[in-house]
Length: 121
Image (cartoon, rainbow, N blue to C red; front, side):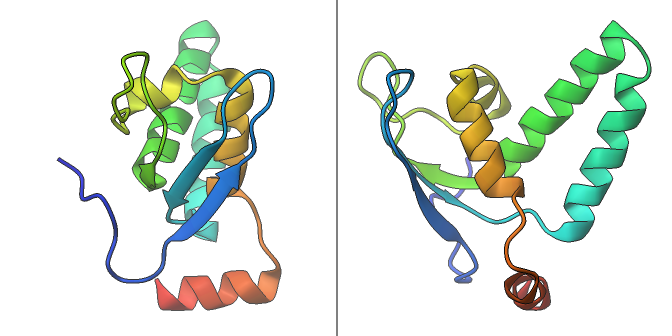
């Protein structure tokens, strides 16, 4: 079972505002480092060139990468329980919400901030 938080202090919090498509969600995540983004991009480009099966594999790779960077969230399932953070749950998110979480986890910050984060990690 994954830990509910990372105690090293290098996590970030973000509130994704509600839209008609999804509720407000607060996420806690470890930002994807430059080398991780580069590797993920190269892998997805290679896989996408292999046709439909490669495209499916690339999407699963991205979903798994996002799930691995999420430390916590307040997303509830249909029964009102806290949803587990795993590739299956992340892959089933409403597409607009997934896109916003992906942007937070894999997004680029100011270069000076990113260098500082990379140095700490």
